[in-house]
Length: 571
Image 1 (tube, rainbow, N blue to C red):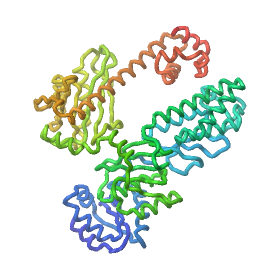
Image 2 (image 1 turned 180 degrees about the vertical axis):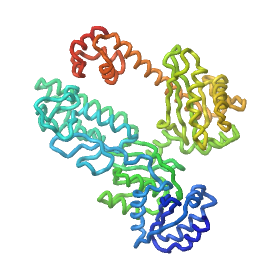
Image 3 (image 1 turned 60 degrees about the horizontal axis):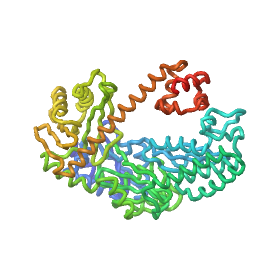
Image 4 (image 1 turned 30 degrees about the horizontal axis):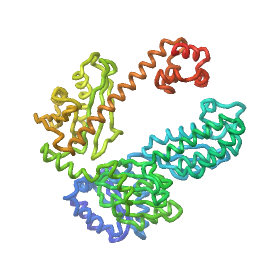
């Protein structure tokens, strides 16, 4: 098969175009572009012995096809369209099926705020993207709570206000509860809050407060005061301000990791590692990351900053400028403020040294993944286990898992640990590459891990345990290592151990609060399953329910007599 592929490479044309690797099933597994197709394919062949992913692609392929184009830019555009259409498994692809979410203040008489994952699909002013993606929903809710932009879409015609008005989430323009002038100020304030340019509106809000106070309209003045406080807090919490560009996306490449830092309004508004599926033939990795990211419909800022050289800068700029509708600039200079921010928050420069120390200390290569485990209980009640994940230099919170212990009904840390490890280790049987396991504890906890390892036949699994205070690391080959003698290893293992402990304790506390609240609510007449869930979702704790007024409970849909029962019981 390989000889056949090599013959096809010899037959390839010396023209610009796109080449496509196809497997036996007729599926495209890799698509690339080139100014000279034959030379590019010969370059891939030369990398076969050095790059296992290149070898994998050639071994899986039964045919190479190509499409000749008039220019290398036409090849650039065609490659992106074909990758989008066929989704080859070895091309760079973001795990997220669409772009990162943005908020849109709509372009309407009475605007609202909506979530969009594709720039331009909704008519309005865009803000974001929000990194990580889960923050966008919380920010949308905050905009409704602070600025009362309407929650209905489209704007309905009503005779009476809806429930969101009573909850303080909407100013009810649909029934004329707010003038167009007042609503416009709320919209302007929301935009300033989202952009970070609060100076544009904050003095106007102060003037409006004075006006409301003079007219004895204290409730409206209080709403504006909350908005001002939120804006002032936003400015105080910002770590990096006064950057020399109003909007920019910064891509920081370190090996296989890609950190995206989003700058809007002259400040950092988001940061996240981009998560990719399998990819290969990666000498154009930087170009592929940028085209994949912006091809998803993500907002294109005026400036894109990259810390690595791009193979095809001119075509990339031309393509991005065409999508943006105006010229964009690509820079390879990361200013000192951003470098300092990266150094404070990430350990990119320390990984090579850490790997060397790890290999010298333990005599095996440092794994890409370490999983940390801990158990949390309260006198045998609400016993839970945690699994946190460290990957390639940082904690990967998306991979965290928590376990409610089911088989142990008393105080038995060892039994609880064995259950959690057994449930987790069973999944290891499906993995080609095993993680290093780190257990919070000493020799006893290490022994429980080894028992589960032997029961599941995981011969190649390595297990360590770390004792608190003494910071002694117990290894599965019988060694005891004083981590105070190596600051790099001490930082690594205590970071994972402490995170496993925090995650376990937070889950234990959450269960206790939820169960404790439900037990209390069970004692109150008129509280059934549905009302119990409403109260828990809204308040979380008994203390917060006790602080809620009777009117507030009624607005939640609780009958007045039941609200009175709640207040009477909790008093």
